[in-house]
View 1 (tube, rainbow, N blue to C red):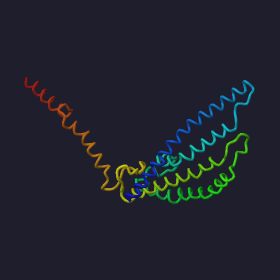
View 2: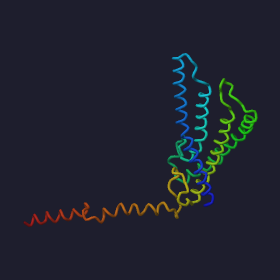
View 3: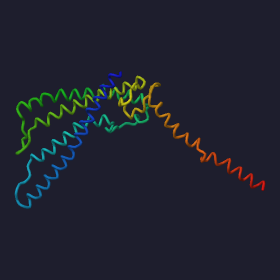
View 4: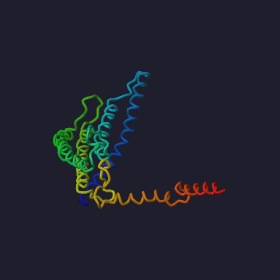
Length: 233
């Protein structure tokens, strides 16, 4: 299981890097869109065509890249929308079982289906160097290739999630930094290091209050003794 968890960490690191890199495409997309709008308005003023379908299609291609390349990163971060009534209240091992079955029965078959039906159109697009039907448009082959990359990364992340869910079902077998998903709760096994690491924290927080000479518990006897002395007087 430890070797599988190492594989899972490698997949997570890959998709983390791709997702963070793809996030910068949002900024590029906003800049291109803004310049396209400004050029269109300026062209209306000076009565010249300053815009092009090339800029508009660049926005579309960037959006497609962000969406497809960010899917695996979003799955890794557990940020995909969940529409359910039961999952949130389930114990961690039941969540792990649901995630494992979902990955094996739905996510991975869907990714393999998309890869199988996309491969030939992408290949044909490269062979014929497919162009946009619009004037001044961009080639279609590069953006179609992002389909294969995106679903390939999503399939890899599905494998990673299945490994982590399996580790939880086997009793939380994980080393530090194994990447067990946060929605599954802390490591669950009796040998888990999470609880043993958290215990000293609770002790350190509690001990200063218990041992301090200025605590509230120490003040009570002093106040009682002072009242007793006043009564004696």
